[in-house]
Length: 355
Ligand SMILES: *Cc1c(COP(=O)(O)O)cnc(C)c1O
Image (cartoon, rainbow, N blue to C red; front, top):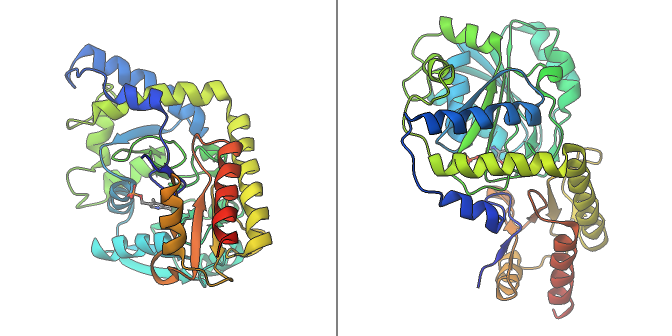
């Protein structure tokens, strides 16, 4: 039996999209490929609210995180850390031989704009890394307030991980002045994993021209050369591109405002249920609209709950890393509907009542 996924990636993929993945192959240097590429880009720009260049990457988003660091940082980067995924930026920065400083808040708390301003007033950085939606803690960081601070430091690149929020909440890339905005497709985009996308600003591309040792696979200047021909430098996952093309059309057909409102409604539903039965892990006012991290106040066995859910065709996520069993996570992102969320919560209630 297929278990419906309510985990923060991969998310449930619709049958129509899975079918698109099995479209017969074409050559990646063919005219048909260039047409497919050209169909995807403007729709993606519309959903990202940007005129920036779009790179399609046959890698998961972590690859693009590394790309952003290698192309946009000469020497020093500031990593804003509030959980496991924002800490990943820090690991990537140091693993690539760059100097890195951090702002760290306790897990469950959000990054505040005044923390960033204070740091930027005292030192100069090539880039700042920011995780919009921290998938371990269920915190949605205040991107608009952070973007306001970044605007006062136009020499610094604003690198944003929007992996678990993009296509579930509005991210107006151009208005926010994001230099690299990246995400993988297996979260709120609801495609199979293995592919990711980023927008890259003129400022980031200019920076890439000056940065040494950008590596090979993710060199922005090579990607740009191919982009201008509606191609990718190396053989991409063409199957993903067929699925992505369809999904972008379907998302625009649903309507962006409708899609964001649906996510908000799913979030409210899960949050209300969590408050009634457990507690929210995220700092009040910063709860994520795409996933909820619940504090396990009843000390249930999350692993046991999940295996019982499995017997009934559902999967949720245990807590991430050090907060495993102390917390659990319910993703409410992608193409799932409010009714699906209600059915999941009813099933959990039913299991918990039998304890
Ligand atoms: C899932 C996730 C990632 C990692 O994405 P991959 O596609 O596994 O590389 C990075 N950041 C956040 C916030 C995520 O939720």
